[in-house]
Length: 372
Image (cartoon, rainbow, N blue to C red; front, side):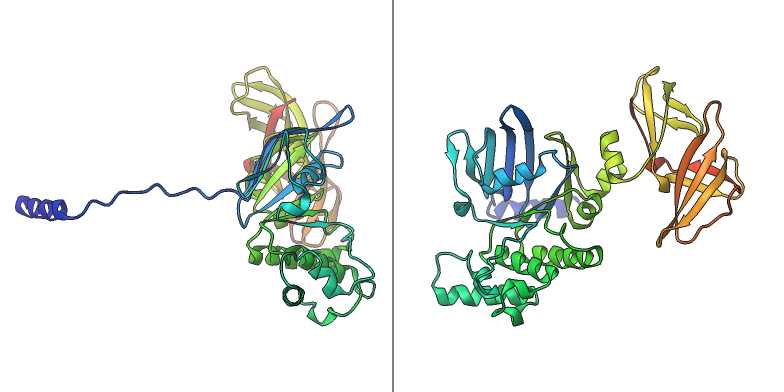
């Protein structure tokens, strides 16, 4: 055995030495650092940091007026920034004293009103954003973009003859046709009815992934963000409250605001003692919070587990309603003070009778404790 090792070492010593070159980290398609902005005296963005990788879909989600659309406008170059820096594909597009206009940023823009030119044909609308190539090539590329969104047969039509969903796809084709490094979409599905919206956003997600462009999409709809995004940035009052993958945002919310934004919650209050919180539904762990702290306990409706018999607290059914894919059960739990009113969401059909008594337990993955 010793001889074999020595022989192998001699062979290795005779080989040329190969230097290991560190792998280069890919430059993000978008980098935003320290972005702050005001309108008059009102601060709408406060020290925002985020990145979008090539081929990634990042959704900015939050309530109206939180600053998400302002972030998109500043990245697009529709106005100069007040403070911070915006880099697109590694090149600074906005910083104090630096401002590249929108047409020089290699970004595709799509807004909720689609902004199609009514006097132009569908083909000319799509070709409008393609620059720096002969007219004949522009038309070929525009036709290819229309074919990708399954609207090639409408090339000679005008926008007013198209449905809302078709107009949305034309706007998407126009934004993708120049092959931008970064796509920016602001509430692109808000004008569509629910059934059409579901289909169009599914088609859009696949087209964006096929294009390879990085995408930042603004929406106020948490379900839409969960459906579309590789990562979600939750915006609150001009700041990023949390950023992460959809599962991380949903199962490990960083604050009560994030937890409540993504679903209805049952709310209880209490105080930490020995790392636990005593609630009408039993003790809940409060890891990392000091004893004596006043806290709020949030439980998603799907985290309330119901059985006909069990060792947990008993609750009375007030009403049960079928919601399609799930059932919502209204419950009353008699406590030491006012009655506790709870909602439980159960997959499929679960319709217990009014006044029926059920036993409750909590799913720890759907139960969150935050400082009050």
